[in-house]
Length: 350
Image (cartoon, rainbow, N blue to C red; front, side, top):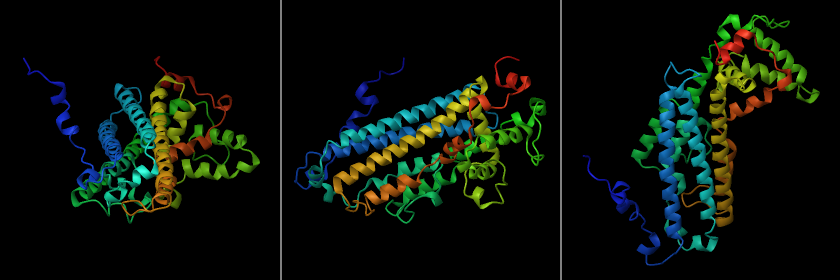
């Protein structure tokens, strides 16, 4: 028989519950709220570890070239991304607990923490990199790893070399097979001047153009950029993370998400948008909490405090290109009708 497992030993409670050492106690200047400050940040780091575990597992599945859109593995991906969203919501709500500490409570021990700062959380930097935030997209690159030790820098740099979730999603979307199967599109004809375009997208472009108000006509140019311009030749696409082929697949999934085969892919895309939304909400709440607590003072780690957090909030959207695709949707009643062959392809019946 396997040895008995004891609750305290299994959870290593002796280590966890004895891992709080307030600086105020060491200096014999008691500050009651420092214990809360330590436990909340330790909790954040434990949840960051779980998020990295989930994202790593998702990436391992997405790396498989055989992954299809009607497989149990895709359901696993969607489920684990949903778990990530739920964890991020919890991290947002932890700020409610932190806000029970008022500014004077924080000042009782704040200066004892220098130069420690949440900016030194290497796990969060790795999480951003694994999700798909590139170094060149970061705000405050001069501070990015300036306060990490050599081992932490090595870990972050290694994470940046790995294929991110966003890059893997791009590859997965770009290999959607439907548009290569000519039998699915026999009921579509090219519009004038669009002979080089797939007949479905030629028809969709016409319907999209007709749906635009006069003030939205520039969207047609963006439509061309997002879905058809050569990603290797234009500045626009060199700045994008998703290829035109991936954008077309993602838009098709959004348009026809009611079909069984596309339901899981749609859930996956929606979970990515939820992750961005929760990260943005967390940054926003964090920024406001910092402003309420220290005003315009600099952070303990030397950053510009609220101003840094505001800029990171504005710039650090990871899946923004997927969100932008909603600009190119049209009303459901105006969607092109799919062929019976394509409907069978997207359904459960053969």
